[in-house]
Image (cartoon, rainbow, N blue to C red; front, side):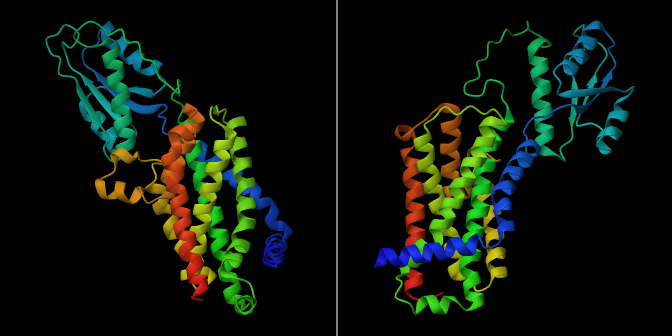
Length: 357
């Protein structure tokens, strides 16, 4: 009897979800477009940043330094005649870094190389300084050039897309599933149909299952399509197990859907649900390690990040893609995702039982 009620409720949810045929394409296409746009736009790589050089030494060695900066592809060098010009160019944001090479630099009489960095853009300024110091370390230190033999594991070319795309996958999954679930329940409140559901013999867990299962299926399709784009379009190697990936995707879906259901419980209108979701989503994304490494966050932010399901999903997703990790290494993340989803789903179901809706 219970299974019949659940099947009927799920069939009703599917019919409501796909009643408007115009929604079918956006549900699949929009996540793909977001992944492509955000992955190309949200890059950590620096290319052709403006670099002003005031070469007061004018020797073959300093010209070699300038050529080495150009050859990296990270800098677009602009030669100026005086240090004051560098300051003006930094003020106008024409350059990110300015270098003053003094007289006698090559001969060793004056080794005080002056470097000015635009601190108004901290990320770009730090990156530019890092790359410039790499050029200096490679062949322009006072001692003999260092013959470095660096081996980069897991991402040999240091492609930022290999790091960013899994984060975008988690972002798309969070926004769509959380928002769709929250709006689906609140919409029934506004239309007055929820009271009709409450007086029926359907149980709270059956109501919750019927509301979440359709979005689990939709979310699974979205994950499959977006991950296919990551592998086929961005050529990100997947070194893990598809079975482990599927399990983590289900756990993540359970967490985000539980969060969406909880939002629907504590709000009364679709506008309130959307505002709440749009408030929560950026916080979860910023405190997940998507862009800012967890190690760089202050202790309170790290504590909040440990309560964030995206944190664990991102760690697992990046490790599966680039390191080939499985359940043996990722069981703590799986346990955390399961606990988060189970607790929030239990709370939401209890609130449904109490008819707080």
